[in-house]
Figure (cartoon, rainbow, N blue to C red):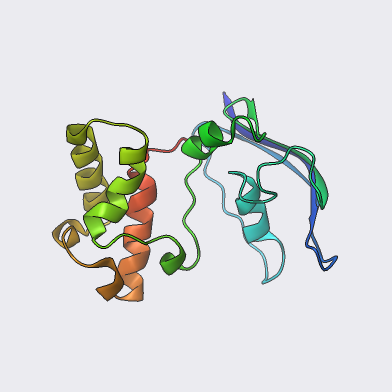
Length: 166
């Protein structure tokens, strides 16, 4: 099986000294489905933010930690950060941190448009993503007028429209 994600000896502490990750190592292969569970403050979100370079801001030599993250065989570095981010889809806990465009369509289309895809491909991806989260009829709605649950579904659609590997 092909390894799609590898984390090796990942350590991270926040600026206040709180150690969030201590020697995390694991591999995921294509087709693996994994659940990450634990109590509040266990480091789940911190780990997820490392997978596409949000923490520690895409640096290989961590200011407050150490270790390596490889996605699709690419070591996460500042130089290949855009390529890695295109491979890893991340839905934030708070959908208001992810939705910023006026309409649902514009939010879901943002990623594919910035990938330089032709408009017919963007339209297809948006339609498929909205259908997957059962929100097809919301494409022209104002994002900020949605309920929290609807916003969460649209946030998932924004990631699905990018067709990430992980």
